[in-house]
Length: 621
Image (cartoon, rainbow, N blue to C red):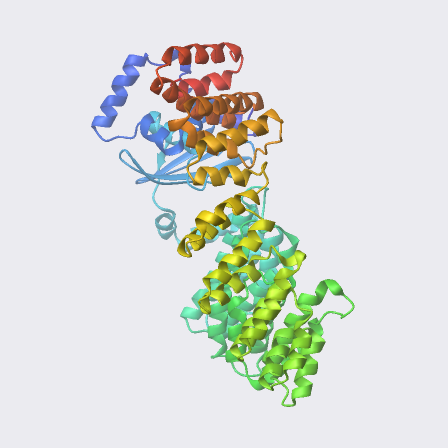
């Protein structure tokens, strides 16, 4: 049952009671009315159902008949209303309707972004059947424009009394309309941002509340920017970014929308820097807030919302500011004893090079690289200086992924054969045999040397350890070009375990359906486990439909029974799709009577499964 609200009973008393389904118009009259509506291009139940879907329409109809829609308004073609909900007190809805077309629709419920929910169905049904419930109103901007100044003041004071948080928002929003003499403080916007992010509202839609609040605050900065009040704009953007960085880790930004909205302040803040006086508090605050975004992103593992920050800081700050940023970086460098911070340690070390510049002395540079684990930069400098043995010593401890990068640097410094030997030796290790980075690097190397036989030998080596359809196809293509496939195929097939799904898929790929069926049946006799996530049996059934329909029917029959036993509408829908295939196969092989007996028995055996019977009906089975 929906929650009972304090004004719910009163609303029921003052509204006209709807006709219950059992006392409605006869079906024939309804059909005639719907046909007439279609002829004149009006909204119909069919149109609503197509928009929201059958299930949402049915539930929305229940909501409509239970008087769940209230506060209905209309602004020309825009319909607005609210609907009592279950996850929240009520949801706000809006839909733009033009005759029989639903142009756009939005509901605040968890699934209402596209307006295809039961609440939207209830709103549209209300408009269709009870348009008198919608009071006609002018757009809000026009209604406010018609008010006198004193009336507007009274309205705003009343709104603040009802929503005290609005007063602090007005405190920072009003300076936009005031003279340029007003001093805008970033701390005010930092405080408002923290407040918006920490008090977003209910469980559902809280991210929407946060993003809306941030957009509202950043729009103030945008307006300052348009007025070329760069100090004020920078203060707004800086405050928002500082508040975002301070509060971001205290809540779950499900889709990253909050971070994306906050970081839209980065680019305009960077644009403000060129207009801010060097050494001023506003400029220093702007640089610091940009650095805070960079710091947060690095601490979170570089999730990406500081991508533009580094470019701005490197391109637009002065030498003194670079030194200041370098000092901040040194404060952030984690303790070397913290092994979990190795990545951050090297990242901050690389940024130190960016802001302090590389040491002029080679040994000082190499020592910096060793201190911060900047092995890539270290190897590159050693190779540039011709210190090959030292470079190889640093490369020896590299991971498989890093080895590829170093191999490419060796090739660039004309040590291609040495790079090949290092990668080939690593690939020969059992622990690295399945590393596709190493495998692909070696393939590319051999192709660059125009050595297809080496590519084939490499693929065969990898295939024996990890046989698969894709690698089989690659081997077949290579061997056919070398005219060795006929003699090589038996060896390849013998290297695949008999109980492997991939062997069955390879038979299917070769058009050997009978062999695939035989392997599948042999495994079934042994009761070998068949993973429900790797359904090679269904692949066999699909391939067998034309040439071996009996085998396909048996596989589909087993799967249908499994799905029904598993219960659930989704499983029933999938089962019905296989049943439709079975009906087609029975008909093609001239055994329609057997199909009729089978489906009749299936209905009888599952007569107590209401949802399954519904799906059978929908599938016309």
